[in-house]
Image (cartoon, rainbow, N blue to C red; front, side, top):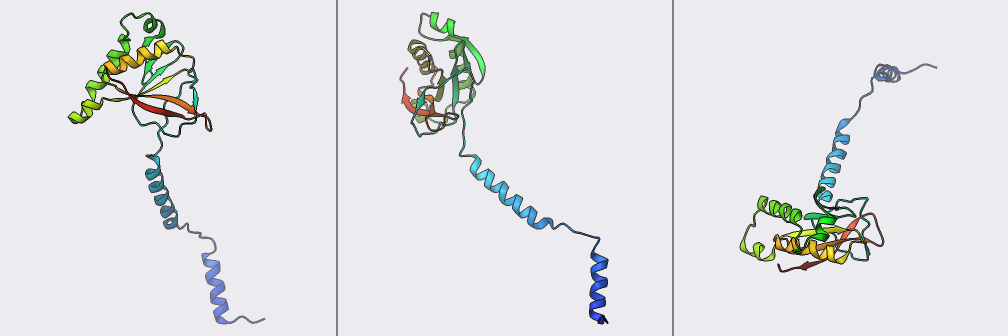
Length: 179
């Protein structure tokens, strides 16, 4: 069968361009740009407290998520601030004056690094989240809370695990403690 000139030209054109393939990056860049903006906008809503395998948090049906604050962790052996050991449980329980000295020093240091912006903030105090093992004695918890209040960390929140999703700690409630 005889091919027309147009069909021959089309066949030559297809043979010539058959070996070279081009990747269109414009649409790929558009997708990544949209993905970056999506992740930036949605990443600010998530704040997960540090999780320590030695701490088993009590369970709750609270729905309020934790705010980004100073975190005091109490496990079976130590009291930690920001993952650093500041005092042992034995020293805190045996302390007679009702203040954990190492914790107070660390909290005062953190407070000195971030001064109040105005007088209203100074009246309210600073925020602190306490992650304590569910078997922590109340007297120890009371001593830690008292130490926090004396160090100007008066807005104390206790972290618990949500019953629906035990992997993510949440704040039960805020309590203002005068010290």
